[in-house]
Image (cartoon, rainbow, N blue to C red; front, side):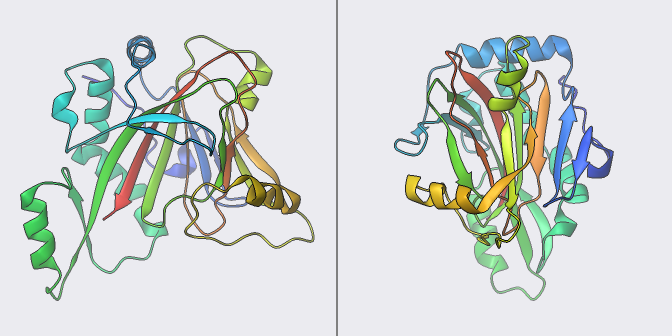
Amino acid sequence: MIKVNLPSSLEEASFYTEDPFTIFEIENLIEDEFYELLVADVKSRQNFDRVFSGKGNKRKFSLGGHNIKDDDESPFGSFVRYFLSQEFFDWFAATHLSKYPSNGTPYYVYNKRSSEFKRLKASNESTAAPLVFYNTEVHYSSMTQGGFIPPHTDSPKKRLSLVFYLPDEPVLEDMEKNLGTVFYRAKAGSNPWERFKSGLLNSRETQRFHDEHEVAHTTTFQRNKCAGFIKNAVSWHAVQPNQYDYDRLAIVINIVEI
């Protein structure tokens, strides 16, 4: 059984700041022995269901309640199953949901493609006390030399985003910084770009963005470390171009309002 080390509040995380928005880090997320198995498993996988061609070339493969049955009891499958659990959703609800406006009672949906959910959602639309539905999806990502992730604030429906770093061995200090996640604030004299809905910026937008923003914090790419933030209209983040002959592996856990 996988054991996950989650703080009871975000303020109790290994690192926490509200400048320029809520950013936190969790060290030693899982036990060392399981971490080694997980890294070896993810490194061995080369099946991807999406490539961000033209916008950094990150590759990813996703698992959720709709397709987790296709994965055996592998370390990655076991890891994903924990983050698809009601236990993890309850942690998310306790630590994140107060940060977002809500018009109903939160309800966790394991499989958003199931006929049961479709019936429930249809009946919910006419009720006076509506449910607000949430779904979790987990993906592993690969970003080889030259790859990057442009600045963005994430999908407007996203309510949680955790990035779990998977270096197979300790890396040099400059690699830890350059392969981590960069968070931004507006430069002095500039107004922050406010976009609650922002996908990956194109190259021209990225140049304009960097003219008006600076690095506020970088979460370092270290073994068994997880980084997260509370999404808002200025929660800009990115990953710098990978300068190394090294595959930046990570697992991303997302909870989305559906």
